[in-house]
Image (cartoon, rainbow, N blue to C red; front, side, top):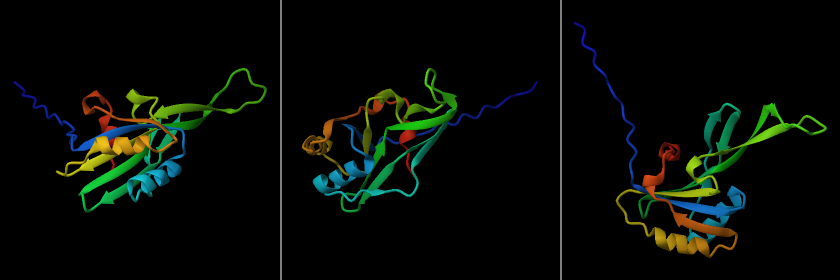
Length: 161
């Protein structure tokens, strides 16, 4: 009789963060500048973007980070939308062959969200309602709201290290 042992590995995602969805048509660097100015952040572009490979190509979502040592938390601004130029897909009906574009989302459940502001707090109480209130004061931001952690199916896409 042969006994089989099964080892199951579960990915453990800590819930020590708040997530704010931002609807805004600005470029990531411009939004980062406005957040720095309005919220007294010091968001800086990370050297490595968040990248995911799809069958059509690789998507690179711009990532900005600010480490607040005083409040012991990290702020991340990340794009949610990226267009991949897929050289193997061609648009039909055009006079010239152009590369087709394929839209991707970092968090597919929130296709209409342009950016996410992730706030990793290590035991400190961050007032996300106040941050959202300040975000609404930035004219190019259409809306901002807190995302319920339980609604995220692709929460592992928000692991930045």
